Length: 196
Image 1 (cartoon, one colour):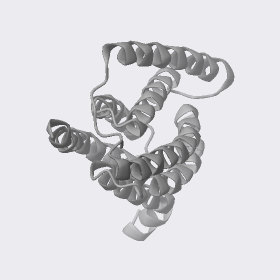
Image 2: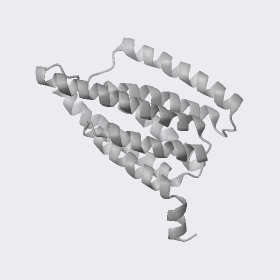
Image 3: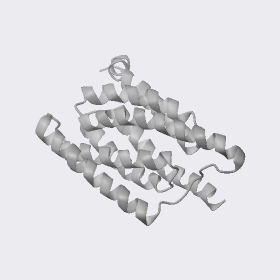
Image 4: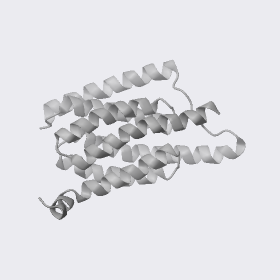
């Protein structure tokens, strides 16, 4: 296969990956535009994961679209409040919140795994369910600017990178390798703000 054939075969995935990288950069910089870019990126990945038969991740990207709308609205509200010094800044997850998020993650994992095993032809139902459940949690944490979201994303990214490579989604696998590295960078960037 020559380069033009390869490019043609993976064009949608490459464009989706480019939007995802832009989203990641905007996330690290805490720019509100990330939510719009996230919606576009997620639309690409709904299609990509449908074709790749990674159904929970496909559904997760539908959730990402909705969560991006929620995050955009939340950050806009916080931006308006910042004029009166009430904006939400980067913070740590309390033990109470962490326990609730763990319970929610386990709940989503169990439901998704059941659905994928019982009703789909997914070749990787448990891994797909795990990354999706963790991603749902991490997205909520991101909307609320909880710094530990970077830890959750790191785990999701490492597992996802392996899954996508296994499923032959090579540009997406490379994207998640970059995401894994960026999770570490993002954590330290946000930690600077937390110290302030």
